[in-house]
Length: 328
Image (cartoon, rainbow, N blue to C red; front, side):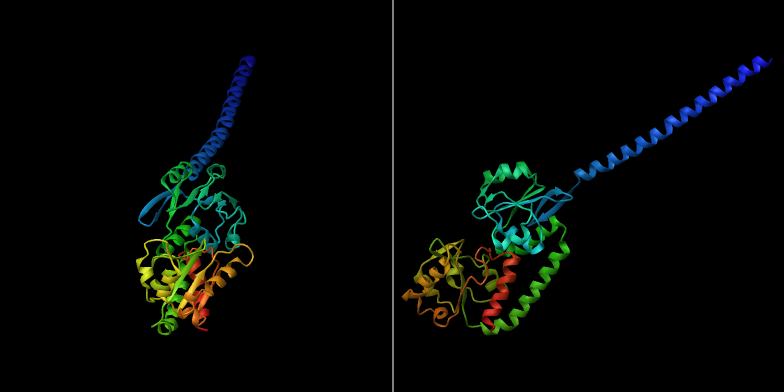
C-alpha cells in the first residue's frame, strides 16, 4: 500500500510541476510578443502617416512630420525659410555658395544646384520629405522632381507672398509664427499709409531692376510693386501697367515715366560694380531732368539686390527702408 500511495503521490507532483511550467512558459512570452506586435502596429502607421496641405487652391499630400525640405529654383521659398527660421537640408546656391542674405537659414543645408539648374542626383541623395520648386520650371524638370518626392511649385507672383509664407509655415509647423509676422506686417503697412499716402499723393514712385546692363520694370503685382501700388496705393506708371512680365525699358522710356522717387536694384558683382553702373546712369544727360535724379530721390539697393520683392521678407525690409528714406 505504501508503494502504491508513493507512486500516486509522485504522479500528482509531476503533473502539478508540468502544469506550472506550462503557465510560466506561455504567459510571459505571449505577453511580450503582444507588446512587441503592438509597438510595431502603432509605429508603422506613424512612419507612413500623411497630411494634406492646401496651397493656392490645390491640395498636396505630404508626410505628417516634414523634417527634410529641399528648395530648388524657388528663391521666394529661400526668403520664407529665413523669415520663419526653417532649415532646409538642401537649397539653391549662387555661384556655388549660399548668399549672405539667406545664410541664417542655411547652416545645415547642402547645395542642390543653381537657381535654374537643379542637381537631381544630389536631391535624391538627400532623401527629401518635400521639394519646393518654382512655377518657372519647365515640365520636364517638374516630372523629374515629382519622381523623387512630393513637389510643390512655389508661386513667383508677389501677390502670393502671404500664401507662400503660410505654405512654409504649414510644412514646418510654424503657423502661429507666420500669423504673427503677417499681422505685424499689416500693422506696419497701415502705419506707413497714414504718413506716406498724403506725402506721396501727387508723386510717382517706381522700382527698377538692372540686369545685364538693361533696365527692367515689372507688372504691378510683381517685384516690389506689390508694396508701392498694391499696399500703399500709389499711382501705377503707364510703363508698369503695360508690363506683362519682366519688361526692358530704355533710358528714354524711364525719362518719359519721370518718377519722383526711383528705387534701383543693381546686382552686386565685382568690387564697386553696382556703384559704377549707377554712376553711368546718373551721368546720362537724358535722365538728368528726371524728377528723382534732380531732387536726389534715387535709392540704390535699399535692400539686398537678390531679394525677389514679393515674399513677405522682401516686403518687410523694403517697407522699412521706404519709410526711412521718404519720411525722413
